[in-house]
Length: 466
Ligand SMILES: Cc1cc2nc3c(=O)[nH]c(=O)nc-3n(C[C@H](O)[C@H](O)[C@H](O)COP(=O)(O)OP(=O)(O)OC[C@H]3O[C@@H](n4cnc5c(N)ncnc54)[C@H](O)[C@@H]3O)c2cc1C
Figure (cartoon, rainbow, N blue to C red):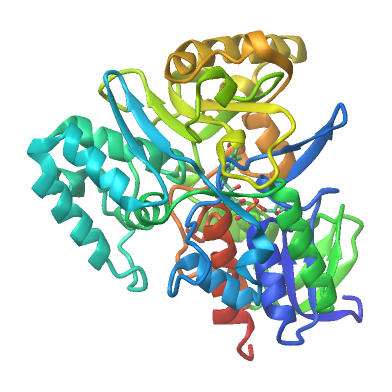
């Protein structure tokens, strides 16, 4: 081991790693974040192509609440990181919708719109829906949740109209379920609040200004960030984590290691013995996505579309499974970043369309077949998506597409599983003392969720003497 001993080493400069790093650096810890890529942000990063900057993942920052709101997750996040609401420069959504054939439910950052839409479209379900809302209001987010309860099953106890159940599940699965066909009930409760009771916003300028702010804050607090520095192994002895080994063989010691790489991915770094004992390969995430971004010569509003995000499904049943073929275009998400109420309008029109995709099918393609498959998949996705929005192709200036292989390449997530393992480790514990899981596989997802995950696990384990 080298002499450089850290209080905490964090694996990964995604949202959870950066938030954990800032939190710990505030307490004068010697903190090192190690990131194997040349860019920070993980699943929520950015890149440049033909002179334009693209966000990798950002559709929406969920959990939006206006400045001054007390007790909300976003307020907690800001307080813990000592950031101001204004620092994030959040532009709220116009409105979004869940669109099934013949039925739409609009929602905005004012829950009353969603409530009135449900009442209007499903008048015979008003009482049932209100009972559900009351149950979710009373749900204790801080009590240890039972991760085996299916939201589908619980919803049946409240709502007798199957279409309404499917319509509620569609956005919540798309924005955070690692479980096929369903979402854990505790996760449903968290997501319902973050999407419908709170809402969507987009940082002005996309994800980069927010990431710049986090990186700057971490550096000002004395934190150390090393890019292009992958962790090869987690060093441990007698059940205790001692530090990490880098790809060049350097060993770094730490009192505590927090890993945002994922459960199976982290266990793999500990060696075969712990991997074989603690990883059930059935639980490695199966859900991944393909997303295409179109840059257009017109804004969506100029083309008659002013919705921010559309969660669409082309039949009355919503099938949230790993598809058998390359993609499943029957459902998806359309995001139009121009349709946030930004102070500075975006220069180009943007249209993002996302559908479910199968990692294995993409993995077996040759490079030529891969490029061709991307083209065909976008055509298939637009066939279902366009009727719920518009066809961006006549206005296309440029496009880019990512697949499950892109997710795997840039984040190391096995099988390109965007929402990680189907079983979460809510207490952040691992079989090793002083090694803890943060981010996606700890159980809180999305920009806000993964940052809160980093903060809460850092508070719980890394701010106390080991
Ligand atoms: C297409 C897409 C759209 C999305 N849209 C939204 C959205 O609109 N709103 C929202 O809130 N969320 C969205 N998400 C989800 C959100 O991006 C993630 O939930 C969140 O960013 C996860 O953060 P994390 O820190 O847990 O993990 P990650 O972002 O995966 O970060 C982990 C980091 O660890 C690094 N790493 C892994 N292994 C090693 C190693 N051995 N050594 C060093 N570094 C390592 C990785 O490179 C990565 O940077 C989207 C995701 C995708 C893919």
